[in-house]
Image (cartoon, rainbow, N blue to C red; front, top):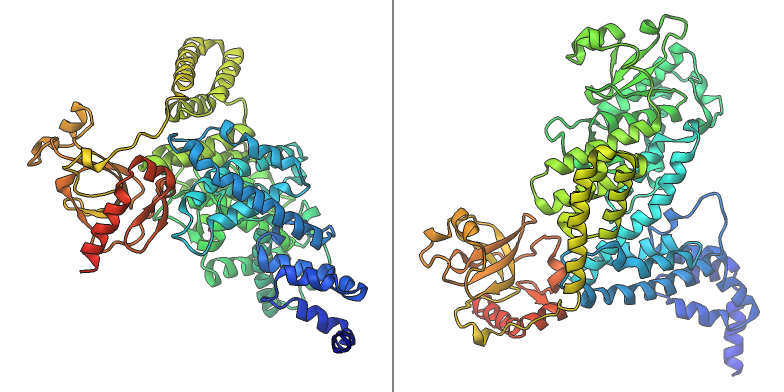
Amino acid sequence: MEDNKTEHSYFLQLPREIIEHILKIDFLHIVDICHVAQTCIILRDIAYDNEIWRYRIRRRWYHLLARYSRDQSYSWYTEYKNRHLFGLKILRMVEALSPKYYTSEEISKEGFREFRSLLSQHKHAGEFLVDELMEIIHHKDVGKNLTVKYYAEKLLRFLQHEYLTQKIKDFLQLDPSKQKLERGAVMIAQWCQPTENITENGIADQLDSLAADVRKLLKERDSSHPIFSTEFNYNDITEDVWSTSQCRSVIDCLNTVLFQQHEFHGNKEDYYDQTNSYIDKVLQNKTGIPISLSVVYSAVAKRLGVVFEPVNFPAHFLLSWKEHPMFSPELMYTYIDVFNGGKFLSFSDLPRELSTPANIIDRESLKVTSPIQVLERMVRNLVGIGRQQGRMGDSLLCLRNALELFLIICPNDVDMRLLQVRVNLHLNINLPDVMDSLQRIADGDQARMGLVAYLMETTQVQMTQNQENKDKKEIKPRYRRNNPDIEYAVGMIMLHKRYRYKCVIYGWDSTCQATEEWIIQMGVNNLSRKQHQPFYNVLVEDGTNRYAAQENLTPSDDPTIVTHSEIGRYFQEFCGTYYFLNHEKRSEYPDDLAETERQIQEIYNQ
């Protein structure tokens, strides 16, 4: 006992900084720190030091700190405790989703209502929810816990949108001078990429870094520039801080840094890639479309005391700079084409550079546009991309995201609301919202009453059918002994002999169950056994779902992971050469897991 007291006394004689450093050692468990805190008053004081728990949060939930305000102080021990307990609760709730919704093609908002109630249980509940779901989805073991990841991703989309909706509405209510375009662009990126760790602080840091690079180059070229001796808050400026020649020096350096050093450029090869509209991806990939590149350019320029205004020209988004304030309106502005390397354009250059008749280009078409109008155009672009994309799954998700966001910004746009109604009817989701939207259209647009009445009737029929089918959606086992012609099993990774795509089997039928029209259209009659053979439901590596004849499939000689958004709906884990069925899929195909494992052993381990 005496020896223990002596060791304890010796430990307490160490400088506080040393003890704090020891308590920050990574392999020291949180429980150990709590035990240390119970030893004596001195160690309790040290163990609950705010910086220790801030460090622990950063080590345990790296991205969480970026979601906290930098202008407030926090009790990091309390935040750690609340985050830990919240995470356990969320994980249990997510694990309960698969038994509820396995038989549903998509989950309506109603299915996530129990999670919505969590948002009011803690000041930072929204951040905790998002962070825990991010952690589940982005866990380093990419082939593990696939079902939990699948539902966590769907839930995260719902919660991110719930969380962002109010933030966006608050943003729209701000005075235009307070509506920072970069913040609006961040919210668009967060909305459309709900599973990505995107924060305003993170984007601001990247823009700050670009501005620092410009200042460094400017220092080399013009060390006497007043930017190095003048303090200003770029958030508060509405006009240039410097003279015209001084602004020119900044802009020349800005162009060099962005377009030569960092090689930002317009994505002419893949213009309609949706990531061109997301500010995080523009900063990461150094490519974008005119509007997204303009947001980045103007945000960096403003940090350097130069103000560019957005010009919502129909054919090509531009920035304007009031280079000659005392000149006539036609000569006052210089226009910047960010998509083409920051090219400077005068008013007289525009018809030629934009391939637009001179009589169409007037002061009205070139007037400064509001931040809300810029965001509306960005989201409208995404709606157009979503409608044009070829792959159905990706297309509908992009389209759904863009439509929902657009209707927050422009709630009275009837055409967009009707398009959203049709998408939700197609997916058979959010039908109460569909009825509300149709009633809203009916109240404001009598000319569309016929269409609205038809869609209301369609919606009511679907709602009735959903209610009737609610109790019928049960998993019916399918036994191999009753289907002796089935050669392959669920979970096997296959190769299509003709089209050479890799896929994973998630279901089978003893004979083709498709319509006669589909059989003819797909050329099934040209097969040796026609439709009178087993057909398999497969998830294809390109993101599509297909129905393939048994004679067209063979086990893949490269049984690696198949990337598909629905893998987690049916499978729990990737086991190196096959997919392990989750509980619901094993209930549907009770014999297939054993058969899959038998065939895998035979094929790959001879």
